[in-house]
Image (cartoon, rainbow over all chains, first blue to last red; front, side):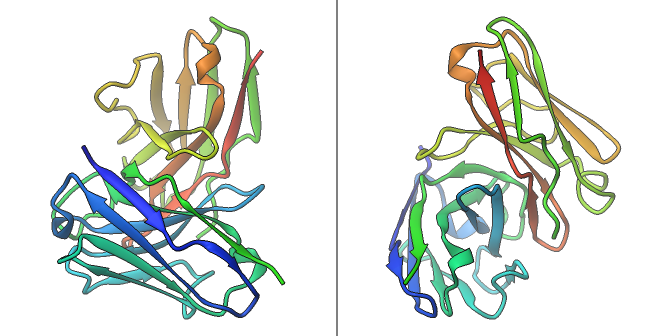
Length: 123
Length: 110
């Protein structure tokens, strides 16, 4: 059974930083690209970032480009999201998600999601 | 990276059918047969209910069905049940290893 468990969320002041983690199990982690997706209060889901299975290719939404960094440690089956220069608009539940295809460089919409970790940016 | 357009809310009585639309562009929904639909109860992980526009994952009821015409995908739920009350989101592959989501539709079962 695929399991994705996010952690690292919390309350942070504007301009601050947080690092989110996503522990994956139940599938061969290194052979799948991965996503971060967020759900903000009163807004819909928003794709944040993608990373290839090897970690060599990364992609970002314009809203976070230059501030967020996605990475992974395949030896630990863990996905990360380093978030810097946080803004109030980044307040959301952050979900990691696995694409509905393997091969490391496939980015079809997800089939499995974690429950999310809540990030609140406020002074 | 503009969001797909969904109605904010829909409602129906038990046993009825409802349809939720998801309108994108020729760069996302219209270009790929890679639209998925998710059911989301707040605080839980979103659940995949339709993929590739029309296919069911194992274990998902066939009361859920999907379709696509041009730049618009649709989700139909037939035989509404109280447990269907949730938020529903569409998602399309948008090229260049990116995804685009809809704004979400709140389904109320009257």
